[in-house]
Amino acid sequence: MFFGGGGGRREGPRRGSDILYELAIEFEEAATGKKVDLEVPRSETCDVCNGSGAKPGTSPKTCPACRGTGQVSRTQNTPFGRFMTTSTCGTCRGAGTIIDSPCPACHGGGTVQKKRKLEIKIPPGVDSGSRLRVTGEGEAGEKGGPPGDLYVEIYVKPHNIFTRHENDVVMEAAISFAQAALGDEILVPTLDGKASMKIPPGTQNGQIFRLRGKGFASLHTSGKGDELVKIKVEVPTRLTDRQKQLLREFAEISGEKIKSRGFFGCL
Image (cartoon, rainbow, N blue to C red; front, side, top):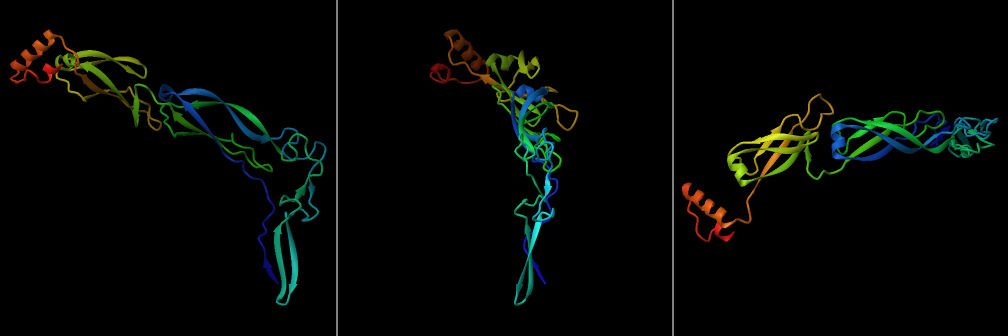
């Protein structure tokens, strides 16, 4: 006797599918964390039939075609012997049971579509692409199987001042030529308000200063990143005659030779 065919066993409980929910948050919210209320559309076990798919007061019946096995066999005699094939039952589609009176709420499917309200806690330090897993809040399982999980994928909106590099916050601060040369103390924005920062005399354009602990919290450690302030020295584009004269005197004292129609002469 020969055996063949692609039959399988009767279908049992199956885990529900996972759900991916995309959530956009502000730059500051990614740094501080927050709680958000979500409304997630998903399939849930039917409350009317408790997931059986049968009308209340009735129950699924054993499939008469496969006698509850979910598969059927067929035997064929050939010149080479008896050949048997096994395949999924077409009457019950492998379930092993049939429903004569479907549930009016889920129409025999055992699940219904609903919107689930959930409160999700977003931890400080998340970044675009971070995924938060909420166990058991995915699609309902089939035939008594467990539900899937909900994955919340984070997208952090761009900020008009700050950018992020790993756990550090990066920004650019503009200062005048005089402030760069003589030094000063300025206020710079941070994620939790303004902070005072000293500009030492002789600060160069592009120089970077570090404010410790003013960056993002780490998702995996107890540390925090820093804020990196890149200095942009602004060169004046319009000068009075007096300002030009003082700069020429400064250049002369410094031993620099400035042509009358040079940079300052063209301003």
